[in-house]
Length: 99
Image 1 (cartoon, one colour):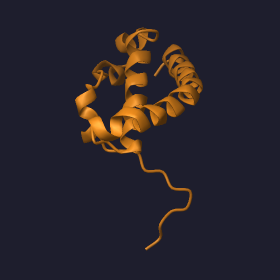
Image 2 (cartoon, one colour; image 1 turned 45 degrees about the vertical axis):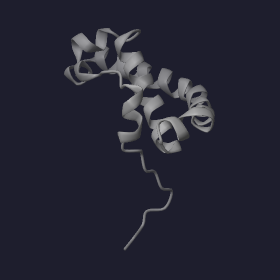
Image 3 (cartoon, one colour; image 1 turned 90 degrees about the vertical axis):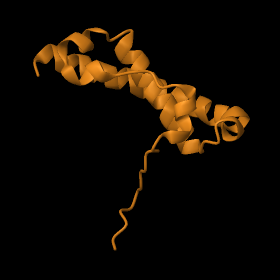
């Protein structure tokens, strides 16, 4: 990975981090009003779907140059709304479960 590609990924992550402050509350409100009964999705699946839509938008539109430079960015696609129920939600824990 060259310097330009690394810089593009860093800027992409910074922009995504700022936009997630807007998208996560919106995703929770959208889940409360629509997605819990229309798509039968959990709140984690709704947040995950909105996050993946944000990734796809950022890579396909403003950071389009990444698709030509980095092969990891070539496979990005927008998910359909009907795929929300089938998403595997992120699992984050503050304390690791030790068995």
